[in-house]
Image: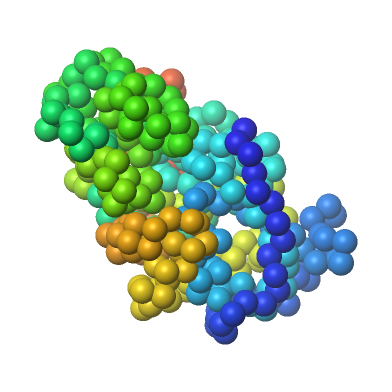
Length: 329
């Protein structure tokens, strides 16, 4: 599992942030009654997993951590696969995860459910090549090496790109590497392409280390989720509801304050401001209700992974959603 950075969230932030949904008092009362999930001060603790450029940066920038009735213990991961491992081990209660990694986690027996869903433009989930590469289309990937994380949305866009171009998965050589190692392999020329996601795509573009060969636009449904373990849902439901509503409202704030949020995001996650703004503006992320279309799109992802042999058994995704969490904006 990847190295984690763990720290406690302060109980106030720079700006006032109005929160609707489950009240803090209800969250505190319901969760504090359960054994083993309170801090030394008697406050509930939410063990929140995160990915680079994810929820913590959004909430801090929007002032969305004000007035918490619980503590947040953050653990940051470079990609969804190690986050899924942490969910499986109950090292974290909840975390953001893409549609394809969630399928992988569920197929491996991880006891989690999606409690919130969002859609975004999939352009930044892409297969990248060096600026001087002679590759022009997905069909040119035949016989080439592509670095990505196993089970990631980068893995997913790779398979979608090659199969949509009439190739078979075995027509390319996929090397499973973490994002930092994959970027290095691409820039040093030890692989021909790198399949990744935001903010890595924008960062590679603005630093002129890579260009987009194939984007996920038109190939992927653009879904990602806030997932939570079954145990956390049972024991900390009001806290998870409150946390999700804060994330939803922070997202709305961010699109009303693009420049301010982009600057804060760049500072918090340590990337150039132009990369932060590029990846943020083109994603156009929006939290949505878990409806029949979301479930159908997720089933399509599961069926595709079964078709290409990445999961061995058919997976009915309906039972992997908890629709009792609202996302009122």
